[in-house]
Amino acid sequence: MRLTLTVLFTCLLLSNYIAKAQTDTTDLLKGVTNQSNEKQYVTAAFKSSRIINGHSMELIGKNVLDFRILHRFGYVNDGISNLFGLDEARMRMGFDYGITNNLTIGIGRSTLKKELDGFFKWRPIRQATGAGGSPVSVVWISGMTLNTLKWAVPDRKNYFSSRLGYYHEIIIGRKFSERFSLQLAPLLVHRNLIDTDINSNNTFALGIGSRLKVSKRMALVLDYHPVLAGEQFGTYDPLSIGIDIETGGHVFQLHFSNSEGMNEKEFVTNTTGEFWKGEIRFGFNLSRVFSLNRNR
Amino acid sequence: MKQKSLILLLFIFCSGILHAQERVFTKNGNISFYSEAPMETIEASNKNVTCVLDTKSGQVQFAVLMRGFEFRKALMQEHFNENYVESTKFPKAEFKGQIVNNADINYSKDGSYTATVTGKLTIHGESRDIQSQGTVKVTGGKVTASTIFNILLADYKISIPALVKDKVSNNVRITVNCPLEPLKN
Image (tube, rainbow over all chains, first blue to last red; front, side, top):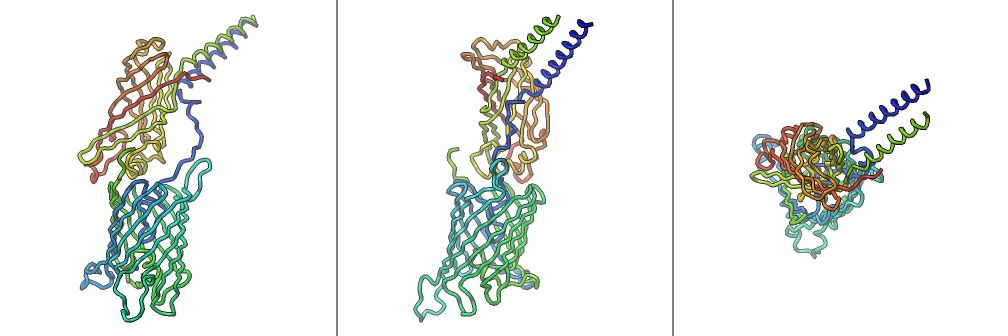
């Protein structure tokens, strides 16, 4: 009795061992791979470094040169005589360059007001999953604009500083899922010279940007900048909706917007179209990136 | 009687321990891939490949995190993860297989042995049976496993849009190189 029991017991153990050995061999990696949740940065919350007008929480990466061509046409409700606005266009041409993965600088020139602009964009906090990962990205952008039009009143004493404008922006954004990203961006614009007393030098707006991916290479985007303080007389909150289409090294952003300006100072303080009245412009952003890395 | 069974048990456990020691592994293996299309050459490498080889049975297994592939172009890397292999949905690629001619490899004698490996490769959530010729190199008791083989992206349901047909080739060459060390546990 005892013998049979022992044999049975041993057999049981043995079979147990064999079974264990088998599960072990079907997964050799067990015990080797750490199933830990390592910190991993979240990428591609937006396809481009701009949502439409405003900056997105994305940076372009180290040693990447991004050549951007932006167009804004006339009002769609001008009708057929103006080919729904396509007969006139404003343009901004610019270069962005990634110094590090978290720091980008850029310059551009708009045909509107013959304005130059330059900025830096720094991401001190980057959204990441896993242990110690931040739930949001935080991006700081500061820029300057320089109007190079001839002086409106040449007879009076004009100062160079009158041509300048500044903007500062903090983006707090999160990629909630593969499809949905949202960011909030308080933004302050200061202009050294304003045209009338009733306006204020400082304008404060809240940027709201969002993306909804509809396919792997296409996304709907929304870019809204309600002005909270210092709204300019006769201007409206810039609102743009569009679609991002990505093809390899290009991103095409096609959109409808009530603003004409293509830098922060301009679209926050000088959006004269009333969106819901149909004073909407068609426009597109075209981005082409070049990788200047020579070695890995 | 009791003693005998105890000895038997001990023997079983010991054999188990011995068995484990016949495994070699790495967490820092190298896998790179290369594809050439008329307009673009795509190259990336991953230096954190996990590989375990059971020298006794010839069973071999690889695992790699797709996010760990590094490209020269940042945007390429982003597109690789976002649009092609969908790293968030399918974070890992795995191979589970067997060295068919394991008996021909003498792991205790220096030399370079040709190994024929068959098994299942899983990329992008799709599994395919593959076979490849590889090399097992033994130098001073250290084992290095390496192989080069080709896969078709279409087999793994990684689709290439018509617009980038000239830039992304369906045919990808994969190079594996894993220096292995004894696994103790």
